[in-house]
Amino acid sequence: MGNRLSKIYTRTGDQGTTGLGDGERVSKDSLRVDTFGNVDEVNSAIGLLLSCNLPEPVFECLTRIQHELFDLGGELCMPGVTLIPAGYVTQLENDLDGFNADLPPLKDFILPGGSEAAARCHLARTICRRAERGLVTLDREEDINAESLRYLNRLSDLLFVMARVLARHDGGSEVIWVHGDQRE
Image 1 (tube, one colour):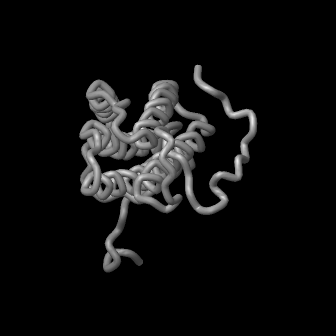
Image 2 (cartoon, rainbow, N blue to C red):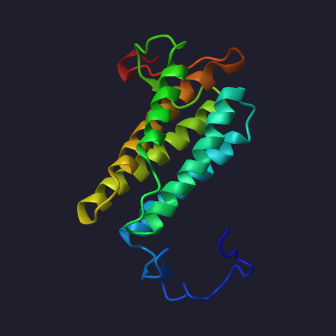
């Protein structure tokens, strides 16, 4: 394994710059840094979700995804490097099909909630959508691995389906949105 951090603070970022994996120094508010920061945030939100009591298949899937998101962050940190293969996207699609198979058809909009785990999953989904929007913006300025865009798109879909699964876990249910003129 490469160098490990033995000293956490380096003072090299005190002037508002950070180093990319290729050694280039860029502003901490650059689009690239913002994008991999959003990917890191998705990963952290999934870590928070993993602290809940989850069904084993969900736990195993999310644990794998955390590693894949770290790969994606590394890819974004090292311009020109590809770490997200098409197989990651295919696996997410297989996961989606598997988790969605036993769910009833969605006939109404649902609100984020239903259980603590479902709400945390919805939060991870919305952060994932933000990361995806940032990656789309970055793609307009720089060449980005198309699989990375597909990956974040599928991941947000998977997190939505997982939230539906988790809302039902242990006998719970989803929270159905009621239009304003129909609420009492």
